[in-house]
Length: 499
Ligand SMILES: Cc1cc2nc3c(=O)[nH]c(=O)nc-3n(C[C@H](O)[C@H](O)[C@H](O)COP(=O)(O)OP(=O)(O)OC[C@H]3O[C@@H](n4cnc5c(N)ncnc54)[C@H](O)[C@@H]3O)c2cc1C
Figure 1: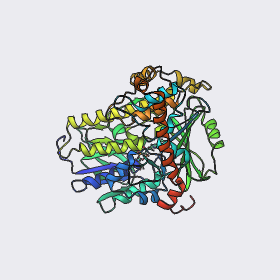
Figure 2 (figure 1 turned 90 degrees about the vertical axis):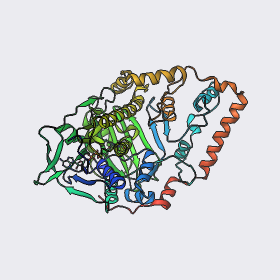
Figure 3 (figure 1 turned 60 degrees about the vertical axis):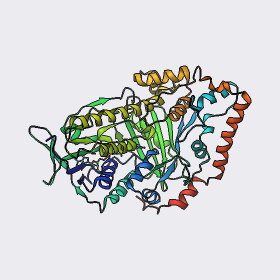
Figure 4 (figure 1 turned 180 degrees about the vertical axis):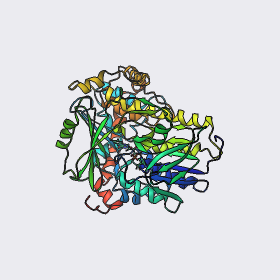
C-alpha cells in the first residue's frame, strides 16, 4: 500500500482549505492526478477567516489569479498591517506594518541605529520609518509596477471559497455534495480506502486530504493522530463573529483591540465590516462577552452573532498513512496575526513539492510533519509574544497572560531582545525581524543595550540620515490616493443582495 502510485486525490471538505487545495493541485498537477472534493452544504464552513498576510499575493500568482477579478468577487479591500490597541497598556496603540523598517546595514538592523537616536532624544516613533505603517495611518494605498507597498487583503470567506471553486472549473475537479458518514480503512494497513456518504455513495482514492475543519474526520476521528494542546499559552477558546454595516471609508488595515478577556477584530470589506471578539471562557461568560461585543460594534449588525469554540494546538502528525490534514483540521493558532490561510497555502505548496507520485514513504511523511511542526511553533511563539508582553494587570485574564510561563524558544527571544536588542530569526521563518521588532517595541519591551554601530556616526549624521528616511516616506505617502478611492477605481464590486 505504501508504495502504491498516487493517481487519485480525494479532498474532504470545501471550506477555504479544501478549495485552495483543489485550485492549486488542479492548476499545477491536474495533468497527473484526478481530484474529487466532497463537501456538505448542510454542514457549511466555519465562515470566518477574512484577514490575510502578504504571502497570499505570491500564492495567487502561482494560481494565475487576476487580482482585480478576485477582489471584485470577494468584496476585498487591501491590508497594510494590523493596528493593535490596548495591548501593552490600556490606551496604547502601535502598528505591525507589512514593510521594512528604515535601512539596515550588514552588521546591524535599523532599529539599533534608531535606539541610539532615542537615547540622544530624537528619532520619533519606529513606525515613522515604515512606508506601509505611514500609508496605513493616512489611509492611503496604491499598487505599483515598481516594488511598492507590501500588502495583503481582507476578503469575504464564503465568497472566497466560491471564487476558488470557480477557478477549478474546466480543470477536471469533480465536486461531490454529501455528508460523510464513515471513513473506510484497509483492515491491515489502516490506510484510508474511501469515504462513505450518508446516501450510500462511496468516494475512493489513493491520497486523502482532510479539510473537514475542527471536526478533523479523517486525521483524528479515524486515524487518531492526537492533539498537542497549547491553551496554557494561548488561553482564548471562543469567538463571537458578526457582520455589520460599513460606516465610512474602509481602512487598509485590520484592527485588533484588546478587551477584558481577549480582543476584538474589525475587518473592513467593500460592502460591510467583519467584526469578531475572541475571549477566554474561563474568564468571561458567553453572555458577558456577547454584550460587550455588541455594545462596541460601529454600524448596525446584519444578523445575530455566531459563537465559535476552538482549542489552540497542533495535530501531532499532519501526514499519517495516506491522509494529510490542512486548515483547521491540522491545528489552530488563534487569528491575532491572521496566519491560518497562510499556513494552508504553505502546506499546499509543501505537498506539491513532496507529492508522493510513486507512493508514500516514511521519509516524505517525516519531512512534511517536521516542517509543518516547525512552522506552526514559530507562528505560535509570535502570537504568544503579544499576550506575554502585556503590562496590563487590570483583569484576571491579563494578569494570567503577563505572568504565564511561555515556550523556552520564546523566552530566549524575549531575553535576547531585552538584553541586547537582537532578534533571532531562522532563515525559513514567516515573521521577519522587523515584525518582531515592531511588536516588541510596540508592547514596551525596552532593550537594556543595543549594537554600538549607531555610535560610530556623529549625532548630526545620524539625525540627518533618519530625517532623510522619514522625508522619503512622507513624500511617497503624500503621492498615494486614498485607499477607498483606489479600491473604487481598481476593483469596485457590485453591492451584494441584502442577506
Ligand atoms: C474565530 C476565528 C477567526 C479566524 N480569523 C482568521 C483570519 O482572520 N485569517 C486567517 O487566515 N484565518 C482565520 N481563521 C482561520 C480560518 O477560518 C480557517 O483557516 C479557514 O477558514 C479554513 O477553514 P477550513 O477550510 O479548514 O474549515 P471549514 O471552513 O470549517 O470547512 C470545513 C469543510 O468540511 C466540510 N465537512 C465537515 N464535516 C463534513 C462531513 N461529515 N461531510 C462532508 N463535509 C464535511 C464542511 O462542510 C466544510 O466544507 C479564523 C478562525 C477562527 C475560528
